[in-house]
Image (tube, rainbow, N blue to C red; front, side, top):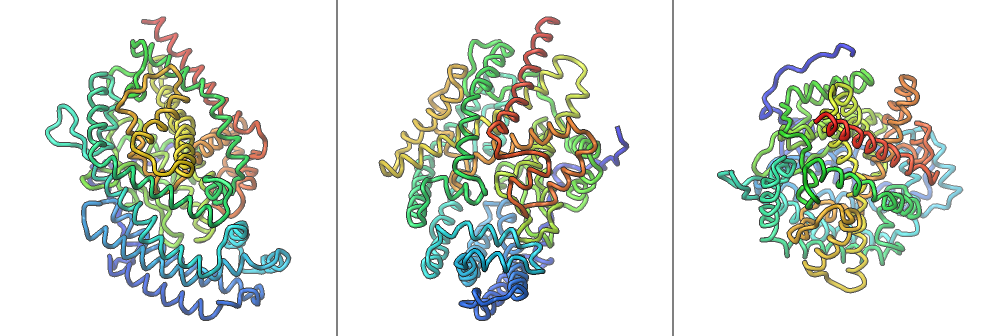
Length: 604
């Protein structure tokens, strides 16, 4: 093992991010100032270029793109500051007010600039390709090409302006209401004096004590009940809003707009979904094995995340940071050094706090600043893998910063590549250190369940979404009971007869934010997981010689199509067998887990 600097001991409660670099130390006033400057620049840009895009030469196009980059940076700084501040404390009305103000002002800027993309998309292909050869477009050329893919779905400029402005009081407002409601869910679990946040309660489902799991699941169901109809109404409204957008823009299906933004064809996504569904025997096989290991005839839904170990493995924050940084260093000092900055420079917010948004995420923010990582660290071993996962996103963002504001981000289909790869590096280190069959089984169990959650569960949720949007369009507003039936049906297809679905579980669709904020998003997790597993398999096959190619892949950001970026790692996304290659790695891990389980049983 290479020598790697050890992190100094830090109390978890002190691991909080500093958002001031986003607004140059000026707080809320800085966000307002930046938006005012962006609005002024946008008005000047419109005055200079509106109606003239077809007349620009290459040098003028490059100059225009540079100015758009400056405006985007200003809006991005202010917007990220507001949303990250809100994520830290959703209970503070001032934070919600700032999000609303920033959203409204950012929309006004966007409205002023809408003409540019519309006029650019309207150019004929030969003229556009001629302009794209110009110098000065090195960090916007692919972005300009992707805009033109939307040509069949764009409305007139006045219509686009109306759609954009109305989104503030429409889709965005409903999404914010859902976020506030979801963040406010408190669960009264047994053996606690005060209710706990939903994330903390859900973490108890990993308890080795079945009674704890059962009573916790019942408590979660009870906590979801009070505002269930409101969240159902929000979902109905979002689904109908999307149906209207899709009809006006001539998208052939509810998922088509998401696929277009992911630079993925409807056919390729369908192939992914069907490949995963054809392998539903994997989660079913695992859950049957898990029932045996837990001494149960059959798992219930609240047993699926139960720890195989007889006691929960606690990992404090300093140990977690050392595990992750050492794992990254063993692969590449570049990854280690990039990740270490997140700890050293206050780019992470880790503790669970009242009012804090649940879950974990990485915000790319803008290339002129740096990414931020949010966690709700509860000291469980899977939280270490979550840390590695989100830092993977962070390293992807940091390495792609030179691509600029238009090409730093990847499509969602590539967004999970670095995160899953980073998580797999940490898992490999833990597995290599495991000395007994029981220890290997415990680690393999966590990793297999991660794959099930990321690949199979996300595809099942995609099937739920598909059913919701299709039924909403065909039959009208859905009742809470119908949501529950569609949820149960999609889960039952994945679980087969290996898991009992309880009555209470039918409402658990209602806390998933992706259904509201980013419809159609969830399949990208499966896409990214299988892609990352294939990339990792290539690393195992090629060894050290693969490392520079992986760094190149991350550094490319979103500057090329997914197919071109995957080709950097020697992968062909157009090959129908590609998805099965990734699934084979999951199948191999399941075989290793079954072997370890047999050894544990024999030694017992």
